[in-house]
Amino acid sequence: MRSAIQQFNRLSISQDAAPRSISSPFIRTLTTTTSPRASLTTTADTVIPPPSDPLQPIGPQSVLATIHAFPSLEPLRFEQYPASHLYLPTRRDILHRAVIYEGDKTRLGTASTKWRDEVHGSTKKIRPQKGTGHARLGDKKSPMLRGGGVAFGPKPRDFSTKLPRKVYDLAWRTALSYRFRKGELTIIDGAMTIPYPSVSYVEDMFNAHGWGNKDGRSLLVTLGKKGRRDFREVMEKLGNFGRMETWDEVDVKDLLEMGRVVIERDALKNILLSHQSDLTNSIWVKGLVSANKQEL
Amino acid sequence: MPPRLQVLRTATSFLCPPKSTAITPLLAPFLLPAQQLRAASILSSLSDTKGAYHKKIRRGRGPASGKGKTAGRGQKGQHAHGKVPAGFNGGQTKEEITNPPRGRNKFNPFKVEMSPINLDKIQSWIDQGRLDPSKPITMKELNDSRCLHGVKKDGVKLLARNAEALTTPINIIVSRASAEAISKIESLGGTVTTRFYSPESIRRILCGKTHPTISLQSPPSLIALSLPTLSAKKTPPPELSSALTALTSAEAAQEAKDTAVASVMSQVLQRYQFRLPDATSRKDIEYYRDPAHRGYLSHLVKEGESPSLFFKMPRTVVPGGVKRKGDVKKKATKASAENKLW
Image (cartoon, rainbow over all chains, first blue to last red; front, top):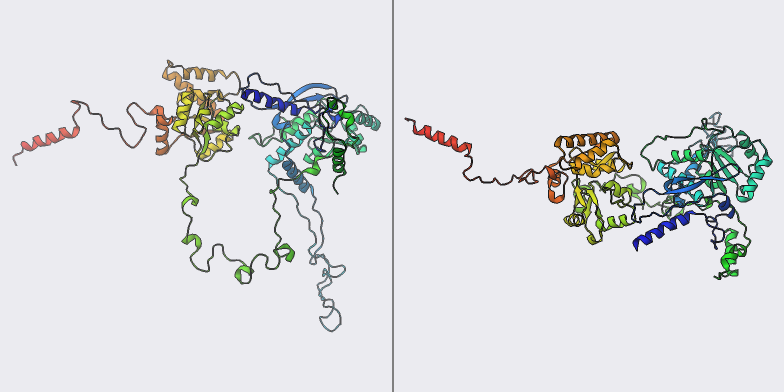
C-alpha cells in the first residue's frame, strides 16, 4: 500500500511538471496561467520515469528540458537538469529579496546639493542686528535666502543593501525554475543569430512564435555578443518586442520581467554554474563556457 | 484600484455556473469567456514573508505616532535626558551581581547537547526513499536528507521511540545509542556503531570536509562498512576493492589488513581536507570502549579487561602462585636479624 502511494506521488510530480493542456485549467489566475501558445512552442516536458522498485532511494531529482533549434524552434533533444536548478518551488519572498537587492544596488545615489558652508561667498553679516526694522540676518549663504545653501539637502550616498550570496543564488535558480515550470523558458541549441539585419524578418519570427508585444515581449539571453551584432541591433530597434542581453548582463528582475525567456543552452549553463553557491562548498566557479570559443 | 480582471473573473463565475457534463471538457476552450490574456508579470505579486520586516518605530514624531511627546522615555531625570549605564542600579550593587542566573538558564559549558533521532523517523525516511538503507547511515546522511535539521554540538543520539516501526536492517553510526535501539536494530540484522565526534568535526562533516566515520583508531570492521561511501562510482577503484576484500575476509593476515587500512587512510586524506579526530578524554574513551554501547573502540578491550581506564579488574588468585617480591625481602631481613650479635 505504501509503495503504491509512493508511486502515485512520484507520478504527480511529473504531471505537475508537464505543461498544462489548454482544456484542463477552468479557473485561471493571472500568474499561474500557462499561455496556450507557450505550451505549444516552448515545451518544458519533464517526465520522470517511475522507478521499478518503489523502495529505491530517490536520490537527486532531475527534470528533462527540451533543446530547440533556432529560429525554427524545432525540438532537437532532451537534456537533463537537476531539480535543484530548474525545478525549485516558487519562493516569492526569495525573489522579492533579490529584486529589492538589485534595485538598491543599481540606484545611483548621485543627488548632490551644497550646504551653507559649501556655498561660495563671504560670511560677513549682511546687515546690523538691530535698528533696521528688518529681520535679523547673518551671512548671505543662509538656507533661508535666495542663493543660499540647501538645508540638509541630498549628498551622494550608497543605497546598496546586502543579501547573502546563497540567498541570491537561490533566487536566480528560483526565477529560472519559475519560468521553466510555466513553460516560458525556451532553451536554444547553439547561438541565436539571424542571417541578415532585417527588422521585418525578426518581427515576423516573433509573431510566428508568439513572442512579440501582444504576447508580453521576450528576453533573449545569449552567451556573448560575437556573431549576434545584427540581431542585437535589430532588437534595439524592436524594443517593444523584447530585449537581447548576454548572460552576464541579465539579473533576476530581467528574468521575471517579460512574457518569456529565450536562452542559449550555454548561457543557461553559465548562469546555473555561477549561481549555485548554496549547493557547493567551493567558492570558485569552474567550467564556464567562454563566449570566444563558441562555434557560430 | 483593484485590477479589472478580478472583477471580470468574479462576474464570469456568476454568469457561467460550472456544470460537469460529459461534453464540458471538450467544449471548455470555446466556453471560456473571451477574456483579455495579458502577460502579467510575477514582479507585481512579490513580497517578503509576513514578519520578515519590522517597521521601525519613529520616536518623537508627533502625538499620532504613539511615541510622540516623551518618545517612550517617561518623565524627567537622567534616563529621560541622556544615558544611564546598562545594569546601573543607582550605585547599589548591580542586579546581575546580586542575583545571577542560576539553574537551567545558566550557561553550562559542560552540558552535553545531542540531536535525538528515533527509529520510527528513520524508517519513515527509508520508506519515502530519502535514506538509503544499503549504505551506512551517518549524521551526514541524516542531515543531508533533512531527517535532522542540523546536528547539535555533541552529535546524534539514537533513541527507540516506536521501535516496532523499524522493519529494515540498517547500519548506523551515531555518537550514542540507547540500549533498546541497539537491541531492536541488531534483532533485524543491522549494526549500530557509536563513535566519537568533536563539535568542530561535526561542522566539518556536515560540510563535507571530513569523512564521517574513518579515523585513525577506527576498527577495520567500521572501515570496511564505510568503504562504499568513499567512491561515488558503481565500480570502486581497485585499491579500495582490494582493501575491502582484505578487511572483510577473516583469514587475511594482519599485515594485509594493516596495509589495507593504510591505503584507505591515504585515500581519505586525499579526498578530505581534515582528518576525523578520535576520543581523547577519559570519559569519552571509556564510553566508546564499552561493548554495551557498541563503541568503536570496544575491540581494544582485551579479554578480562573492563572498559574503565581507572578501575583495575580484581586480581585473579592463582593457587600456589608466584610469591610476592615484598615477602622475599621481608624474610631475608628477618633471617639477617637472627644472625646479628647485637
